[in-house]
Image (cartoon, rainbow, N blue to C red):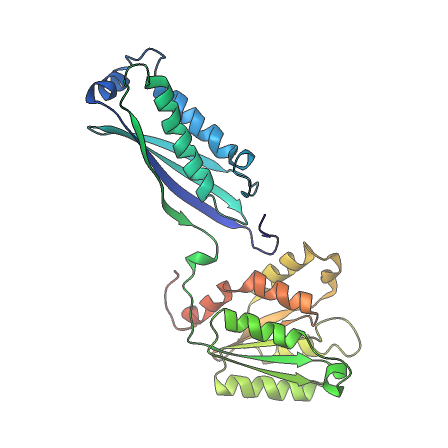
Length: 300
């Protein structure tokens, strides 16, 4: 199965449709409740709901996710019965397969309950009509720039090869950054403040600072940046802390910080490669929407 452990939990919806072609007489009898096995519509509705909840038991690569809501609707047309199934979940992956499975089960149930009165029925067009949730809801932007500052005395001295900076650079490029620069600095407050101010003056869209957010004697990043921020972004910090702590208990000791200077979004996160990967998985691409908000644009 695909690894979805890094994904955020978000509200997911999907709408699927399936159709059963049948004779006009069969459709009339269904509408009038005149069928040998009883009214097939409520049975098909229950079948759709049950199948939605049981999708993972017969589609091997589907993830087990909580099903929060299932709505089943029937439409009687001249030559067919259409079933639409709408599914809602709050999960890390979508509910497309659950919705399509439910729609398919509904028309299969109709077929089973009507086959003795109509030999020419046919199941046609099980398809996904729409879905929402996850990263696909956010348009990808490429009109932004980024800079990464790596705060580390040892890396600046050449004591080890930094991996966090290149990891952030690649992640930012993957999310559409037009340009990304990386610079390694020692844990010195004056140098960091100068770099942050310079980035804001150049109009860098995102400034990501990695390292120096802990409680050690040389961890000066958070305290140095806080006075510079014109607006803080506590929701960004809360989202990252919640995400991090659910994966690593010692993340409680980190002091990440986020805010805005002019048109520059500043984000300071721990220095480990794992923390950098978590930050990008948790915050991107949602964080890109802040520039639309700064420009006075609406929400997607």
